[in-house]
Image 1 (cartoon, rainbow, N blue to C red):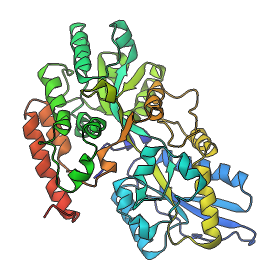
Image 2 (image 1 turned 120 degrees about the vertical axis):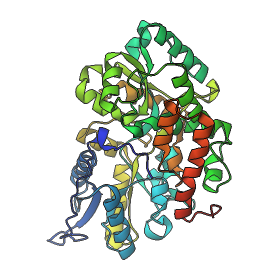
Image 3 (image 1 turned 90 degrees about the horizontal axis):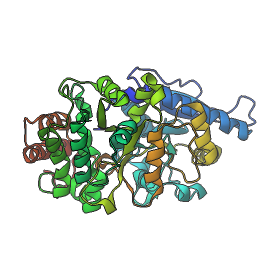
Image 4 (image 1 turned 180 degrees about the vertical axis):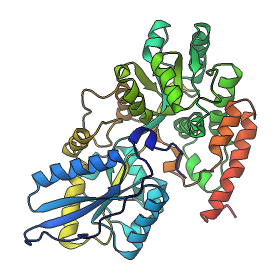
Length: 437
């Protein structure tokens, strides 16, 4: 189960239902002079706009090929539709879908066309390549941009209090002490929307990977646990420590995302551990704070290994049912998506709230400071790592409630980690993963 962030909160992706128009699936141009490609994306406003922008620019540059965008529902209904159409050989010529463990569930070696032999494959960011690779074969081009689990912070508050961006947890807690003394809520939490409670755990995974590179593999095989792996337990400990020190906002138990965003923008709170994509929601209400809010990774114990936990973009994939001249055209379309021109088409179509996963792509000059800060970690080798959900299908449904309990002082960190280890067991067994019987 993906991090329950209701990506709608910052991509305007509501769970509204819209059907796919199937009237011309896979059809050629009426005059027989070219190829028409059907391209299916989910019906979120952002993704629909990016798809239309890509299609418009690609069509203009490729006479004889016409890309037509179709939409599908989001959520479970959309997932089921994708899997059904793949299994029946009725998928559109190209489609957008999640990367990471959810892509793995599509049986890519059976249902998708590998693209590792394409010239553009070598220009992809390593984290994205990992997220769309199965059995050493690459299957997708990046659609959209990176998101990050990190700490958003008010740069003006930092400047006023003479603080520097921390690279270790101890430095972060020292900053919090100074902020509390200055009358600023050091760490904003919004447990009124429980999904927001998870970032000290999920956003800390770069530090877990840095300490134990094979954790995701062992975790998936039931050979590693949060409660018995110090680097993984640290996320739960962070929740406990921040609460125990009195560093949260007074309304942490009832505050919701909108409340947290307002506190961060107005500087009554300094830090907000959250997904970077909420910057679009913040700027929708406080556009004047575009350069005021920055980002840094959740710090670990070792400054030398400081880095960012990232959520990879979705992928654009070619189903195995696409063959012949359509396959040739689909490969050209993916090459365009994974190019600086494709990145520019996406940026022209919608607001960009994260770095691209293609080398050579540049960010628009007017992106928020949060995005600029993220880019520095994407550019630096070894300074970013995929979130666990891109490396493992194992995620328990109760994590957000457990994080609220630990972050509220109701449950101690070791107990919370142990409870979560029990929580994931049912899901792993339902997935039929080896080692969980």
